[in-house]
Amino acid sequence: MSDWKIGNYDVEEVQEKIFEIFLEFDKICKKYNISYTLEGGTLLGAVLYKGFIPWDDDMDIIMLRDDYDKFCQVVNHELPSPFKFMNMEMSDEYPFLFGKIFNLNTIYKASNTAHLNIPHGVFLDIFVEDNIILRTKRIQSRVVSAIGTVRYIKLGVEKFQLKHILYAPLFLLDIPQLTKLANKVMKKYNNQKTDYIYPLCESISSKPPLPRRMLTQLEDAKFNGFEVKIPVCHMWYLHKHYDTPMEIPPKEKQHPTHGVEKIKL
Image 1: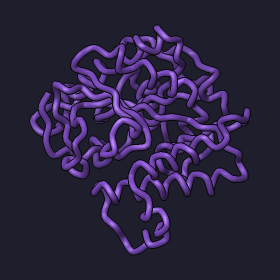
Image 2: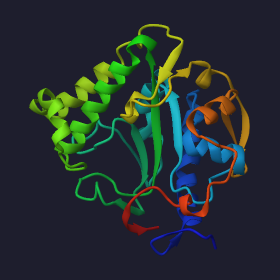
Image 3: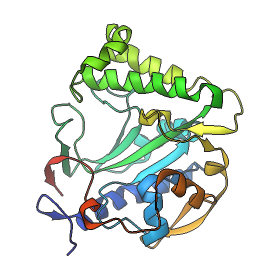
Image 4: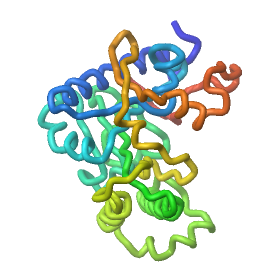
């Protein structure tokens, strides 16, 4: 039994369900020669714990846009029941600019998305790195962030605030138009060979840009006893994203990050 709970469940039980999704994801990627790596807290967990951070309640995968597009074409033909992949092209009620694989036999309902007609099971996040030009990265990422925020507001995921008046022209667009615009802006430089990439789909403009080698130069690592690929430059990445990545945070900061209002595994 772990020290961390989500509802009546141990975090470890949630992690087991997430890892089941990951194993199916990995099978598809291997079959179709699709490259991916771990990012964020999942990468940190692989380095520190050779698995999940003990209190983490998600798993983050990242891939280049070409690999993501290839994955999207085949994933729902390959996934066995009860798993289902979704992204914003598949449903106007899906709020995120990145994809997720859900376990439909589970319930993992977040308070801010509970009203939406989308799957609400345990999930695996699949983020996308798009090409960027350093001198225009700030503008490009802020535009995508604005589009993502307006989609959230229109879908009731986020509340309108006075500062959102700055996004007034975007509110004139409907969800399909916002989806189309988001893709256009995110993919703007993907026909060019750039030195840097960025997870524009996360709708966050404050992250540092990544060198392309982050996703092209990989090495073996273990995650829950399973062999995965992580960036050769993983320590550079972790120090860029965390103040003290190799130190265990204080107890008050050790908690799951998703606001779950209903859970059933």
